[in-house]
Image (cartoon, rainbow, N blue to C red; front, side, top):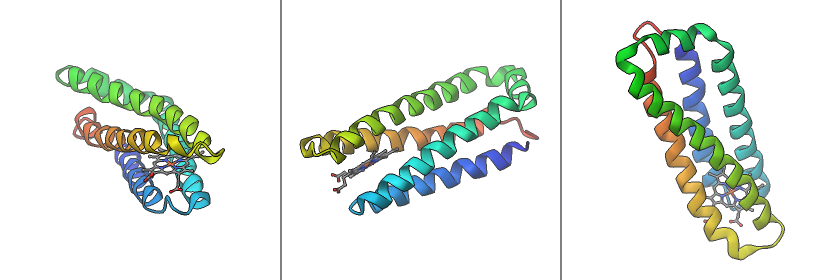
Length: 129
Ligand code: HEM
């Protein structure tokens, strides 16, 4: 599959996350939008993993090896933070309101990581990707 189609999905996920954060006061909608964004992101990772040609092209561009490593590291870290978001989000939902500020800080960190994943994906894609 075209790398550009994957990057378009990646961009949509970032937009969906920002929108989902904006509506956080509507808890039901917030949880739905954030869950959708995270599941879509995991499906996107699967698409990339299954498209071996994309990985081969990226890893063959030796001059990009360092950039690719940085991109993959940030992307993996983002998924780790998804776990923190689900855990802290569920805790807030079950009445631990004092954990809301932690959820907020983790949430902002997750968003920054996700935006960095999107930006660094441009380093990992070869020109005719
Ligand atoms: C990437 C995923 C997520 C991000 C970036 C995120 C981010 C945020 C942010 C920034 C807030 C505002 C906190 C505040 O101003 O006090 C918030 C609120 C909240 N989030 Fe999330 N969240 C995510 C996923 C989830 C999930 C999966 C759940 C539940 C299972 C959840 C449940 C909540 C709840 C209950 C609130 C409080 C809403 C309110 O009463 O204002 N979040 N989230």
